[in-house]
Length: 440
Ligand code: EPU
Image (tube, rainbow, N blue to C red; front, side, top):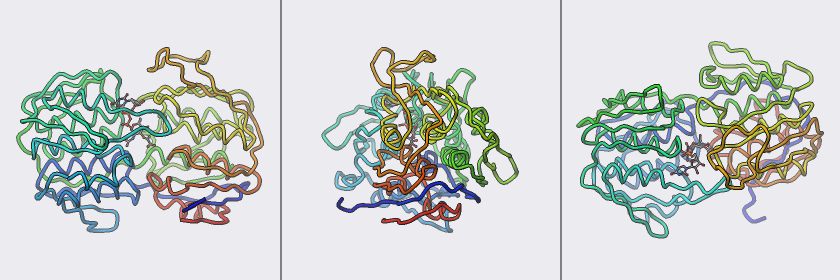
C-alpha cells in the first residue's frame, strides 16, 4: 500500500496506567471560531494537538488572523486583521473537517460575504449541511455553491425564529455563532444542547454575548453590538474518555483518565456499569476498570444529549463482543455507522446488522431502510487481523479490538486517528500496550 501509515499491535495484555485528557476535539475548534467575532485577543487553554485544530489554525493564518501558541497547549487568537479566504486558501481544507462552515457567521459580519469549503459525505452517512444553509437564510443570508465551495452573502444578519428539523450539533452552533452579533433576538427551537455547545456558549458569554437555554431545547440569543476578548479552558474530551474506559473494560485493565468529568458522562457510565465496568470518580478524573468477571449484555440506543452519544457506540460494541449473551445497539444519529463491524466479524465477533430492531424506540430516519441496529452475540474470542480505519471512532474501536484479540493486528490508515486522539501512540505506550510497529 502506498504511503501506508499503520500500527501493529499484539493483544491480550491489560491496559494499565493513566492518561490525561485535554480540550475536546468537538469543542476547541469551535471556540477558535468564536474568536473571529472580536478583534480583541481570545485565549484558549487545554488545546490538543489534533488535526482539526491544525486545519483551523492554517485557515485562520491564511485569513490574516494571528494564531500563536503562547504556552504549550494555550492558543492566543487575535482576529484584528482578517481577510476573506480565497478559493485557493480552501483547496487543501475542502472535505477534511466539518468546522470551516462555522466561519460563515463571523465572515458575514466582517465582509458581508463568506466563502466556505464544501464538506462532503463520509463513511458514516452523507452528512449534509442543509440545516446550516436554511438557518443562515432565515437570518438573512443568501447561499450559492459551486463544486468546491459554498458562498453566503448578507447585508447584515437579523434575529429570526428558527426551528431545526433535528437537534443538529453543528447547525445549533452555526445559529449561535451567526446570531450573537445579529440585529435583534434569535429564537432557536429544537436546538442541540450537548455539553460541547454549552462550552461554546460559556466562552461567548465571557466575550459579552447574551444567550439563554430554555428547558424545552429552545436557545435565545439577544444580539449585541460588539464582543470582546476572553480566556477560556475548553471542556475535556468526553468521547476520548469513554474510548479509554472501553479499552480498560475490554482488556481487563485499569485506566485513570485524568480530566474526565462524571457529569458529562452520566449516560455512558450507566451503560458501562450495567455491562460490568467499575469506575471511581476522584478529584483528578475517573478510574475505569472491570468490576464483573463475566460481562453482561445491554440494549442501548444512541441519541442527542442527554442520550447515549453516537461517538461512544463503537468501542462499546467491541466490549459487547465479550459480554455473555445478546446485546442490541441501535444507532439513530447517523445513517450508516456500523460499517466497521464487518472487520470485527472477520476477527471472530458475531455481529448482525438489521434495518429495524424490536427494541427500536424512535429514529430520525423514519422508514428509510438503513441498517441501523447491531445485534451482538457474545462472548466471542477475537483474533488478530489486518484492517483499515474507515473513520475516527471506528478506528479507535479497532485499536480496542486489537488489544483484546489474541495475536497480532495491523491497523492501516492509523493517521486518521490523529484527527481526534492526541498523542495516541504515547498514551498507548504509557498504558503498556504491546505495540510492535508504528509507521507515520
Ligand atoms: N444533519 C443533516 N443536515 C445538517 C446537519 C446535520 O441532515 O445540516 C444530520 C447529520 O447528517 C446527522 C445528524 O443530522 O445524521 C446529526 O448531525 P450533527 O449536525 O448533530 O453532527 P455534526 O455537528 O456534524 C458533531 C460532531 C460529531 C458527532 C455529532 C453528533 C463535530 C466536529 N462533530 O457533528 O462527531 O457525532 O456532532 O453528536 O463536532 C466525531 O467526533 O467523530 C464526530 C463524528
